[in-house]
Length: 325
Image (cartoon, rainbow, N blue to C red):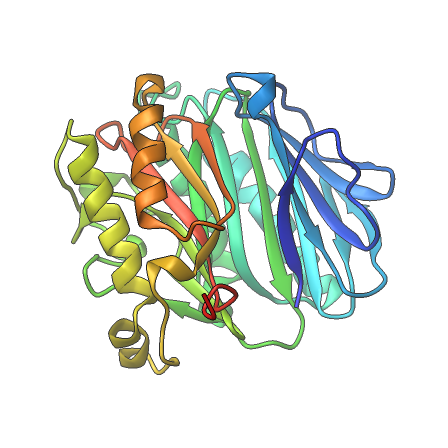
């Protein structure tokens, strides 16, 4: 299985690195740096808060380029990253970029995408035709999934969040022979089944993806059914978001979908907490300390969220690494 960790953004990625994603002050095209696919995302208010997310393999890694994408893989797993240039309209460019990604996983023989991330500039702003940028992006992503991927393999866990950079930076993980199981949450309408009030095409992702003994939790917020809950109330939104995660990863929800016994919030690690208002950071940190394991790796990112009425969003990876405590 691949591994991930958060380190200082200037630290070396180390041996057998599949990828380096830098959450710092600047953004730019995905590229190969010292043999490692690297994506820089403008996500930090302060250089002291910058960090890198490193994905590592247990064995030798090969890296390369495909059109505007960079990638690396071992025998079992593939990492890929790319950018979509800033534009007044994102639908066509997103469909093309995702189409290239789907072509790459097929060409290299890693057909099963299990986790994706999308960092979208001006996510709640309007595009050239007055459509919200996130909805514009979702339209292009949905078209690509419909044309080349979803029917065969389904939609993986994903995050769509704002960035201070320009355009869209994205990255994903795929596997060759493992059997990821995409998981929905019975408290929430599947995102791909949202009504048209949320845009011309619904978001294309599952609430989580179970791979072997790890559950990759999508970006999760204060949404029940398809409705935002508790507009303007940070604490209440936090309770709904963490309640959604606890239910998603819990035994009842997983067993109902043919999976194994489940996890608890204290099993969540490699957590990213996205919060909309800078003034909320102290409270968000207090809430996180109370909710998650004392040794969980957590990073806090000041960012706009996919709906203008959402104040916080949470993602992570559930596993049993802390279960003996």
